[in-house]
Image (cartoon, rainbow, N blue to C red; front, side, top):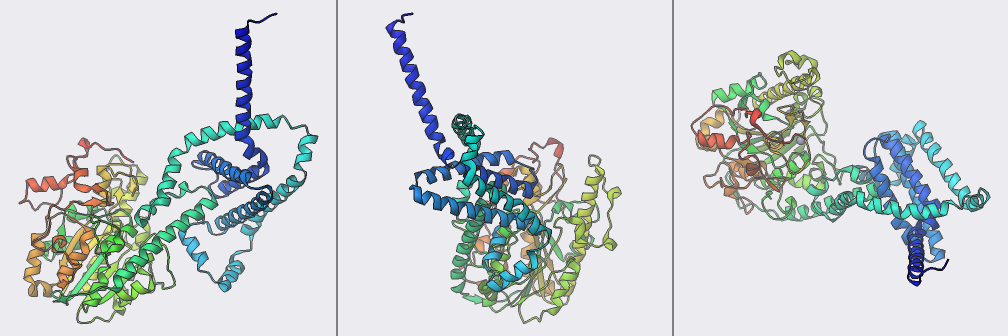
Length: 629
Ligand SMILES: [Zn+2]
């Protein structure tokens, strides 16, 4: 049959286009084809790691797509290398992958840990003696054998396939696999690229971020292989080290102009995970804070209703509540100085008693609870005269550490409690249980949820007793005590949320419960007598809005410290206090704008009724509009 010349032309064109497409597909697949055994081995290692570390729970399949992407890039680089170099580099990569994955799986099997900044810090600071001790202490038993049983056979199989694989492919007539591979590689690559853009964006943000506040928020799932987790840990340590160095330099230069020591004994008590709406001082009905309520009725305690925390994460609160730098200022927290050092410079004796991290001068690097900068030997020396060296299961035993302290003429005593940290029932002994599921009158909650609320209320009541005991230590001194919590907590109040969420931006209910904190001032009888002016100023400031990142200015104001770091506009008790200040929680979200117009806008309610002395009323949650998360 004779074809029309036009159709002939068309068919030739189509054939040429097909050939060009096929060549392009082959070219895309070439890097994988040339390193097929390498790719398959890395995938096998990935599956072993995920199996041992997460038992295939969570977003495993998404991570396979990312691993495929990573492998393609590595194969492409290998293909571009000269032949001689390619073999050497590939061998190095094999060894590195087996060692990194094997060691991490061993850590998981033996110590239930992955590569994290803390783990990397520990490993990098270990000297040869400690390394040998580590191996003697840990590298035996079933965990080691299980790890070896997983990786040694795989390594032997890879070696055998490397030598004889090609022959067996020919023998088993498997060459039909090649065209399949040519098609599969481009298809997988395109799908993976489309699916993983968000994950890549998160990684990019993390590695270009230079502030520890932001880097700390990265989820570990973003780093899905041992190599990525090592990179993550290294970057976190580098950022923390950089901030520490800046802070050290600032702290070496601190100076104080004068100090009147108008309040000679200042006690700062930092609570933990305190949902203030579970305190009688803030309108809760069950008897969770009888002692504090009694003090308030006697006129020796003032509870501030409009105080919010700057973060809902302990370590970030510590940085900002201790540093003279505030979140609405430019730059990072390390641009300021830590206020306890100013107190020392001004002649106060400073004690830091914490039940969450003990003084460990060997630790230099990273920690999630704030100790990474407070345990730095130089900063520790500059800030504190006295530290506790052990931790206690219960706060009531911990506060007795104060009995080891020798007071001077002027003292700043900082207590950092375990407070109401999860798990709530662990915070007190059986003899201190007061609330049970039957005492929780919330019909919508299941029995197990009522138990959580009862546990939390018990912890709050126990904390009340701890505060009373701390006040007792100072009842005969000329002392003022400031109590606040690092952040709030959600305890199934009007949502099914328990604990805290890193979700951004925070929705009104999260801002209200997780960032609203109790803030209380207690005066000893002697203090009330000798400082009526301070007592008056405190009482007058009660209804002001305040965020805890300005705490250093309030502290310096109480001590009468004058220095270039003190700003009266940020001192809650000063008549020049700036009541219009933007309270940017997490440094980004205006708290007042966030809750404005929602049932959580308690400040608006107060402004309408300035004369009221009632405790803050609970919001009408039926009208609330929010997304629970
Ligand atoms: Zn905390």
